[in-house]
Image (cartoon, rainbow over all chains, first blue to last red; front, side, top):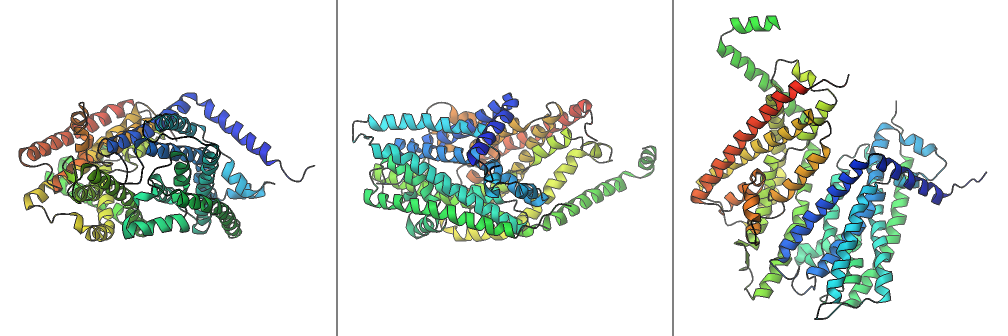
Length: 284
Length: 298
């Protein structure tokens, strides 16, 4: 008997099981897809409204309409991946702790963090991923065919973009694991999801909008302490190439993003393992 | 049941009312003390509510900056549909007050859940009116919330006082308070009516999502609704005819003096009409809903 489980096979089983479960309530599946897409459509409407009053977000930043829509599409990719693969699991996690059902996860002959982060997959959230593909295609098309300063795709952009999207997902995943670990210590962490929503709301706009003393402080905090600003900004800058941003500084930030990703993953893993040690089963 | 009717016959109407008030007071007090238990959570939650506004403020600052450069305006003079940058920030801050009155977290889903799981029959057999009971619960919840939230609100508004052009005249403040109270009533009766749809369809989650979606964007929570009037097409008119705009936009716009004179009077009257309309809808939904109710669950 093999003593190490095949993580890939287990993960594929998770994917399959979740898809079977989601598709057993087929109309609910489609309702959820449409619901999450209409949420995004409303947001898109809001940004279209903003661009009816201005031609860029931030003077001289180069985040014009289609550059910003590349940014928005990037947000959609990252958020939909997080919501599909991690969100349902982490939401469940604080329940596992409160009810003591985490015991069962601990007993299984597989890594606990792997099990509690990947067990459930919420397929309907992928609808926004496809929305993102459409939005990205339209935006890149418009940027490439504009008369002034058209965008030219290079192999580096094509490779770098998905790579940094994945880095962004990894950073958000680490943040989730940190929050989950904190719920082991707190016993119950009801506002975990709220906190998540409020913190990640800072990542939804280009970092150049955070100006002035308060803005710069926020930029520093959310780049170096909790690196959520680089989650979307780094990949979006690679593809959209807004004119107002110094390419040298952008490259430096991209290199930093790689380190931040590695550090977040390792740091959150360390914290999770440490938190598990203080888990006291709560079941009766 | 018979002893109760007998009691009603004997007791004069005054003590009947005082008994009723005593019941209401008891319900109110129970809820008040229950909510006080989580005061730490309350304060933290309130402060966190202001976080998304921080990003909105920076977003609009960037938009106004770009527009000023585009139009060649002097700094601070740029306006979008009559709102200066300071007005927009003040608007967002004020809309949190509107939302503090009109938002009813968990009301509709709670009612629907109680219908689905059969818990609602526990209220049906008690000698009290379900809608008033829920309303009192909600009022107690809100009052507790304001007592807890006043500290973070005062801190935030004090820090942001520069975005306001001083206090508006007293009559505007009175109109503002009236519109806030009515915002609470519309919020309550509208959500309660939606929850009562649960009598007909057991699962109302997707319907609630649609309501939430519309109320998030069309109540004026995301942006001042005047911006829609600047668009070509009837969008502004449509959105301003919906009751949703009274949940966030209307009180904030009243405070900022964007709605004045007859427009204000008519606005308040229409708001009152919506309150009455949703009260009636809620009563009717409950009346006919209970007839359909089959008491699921154990």
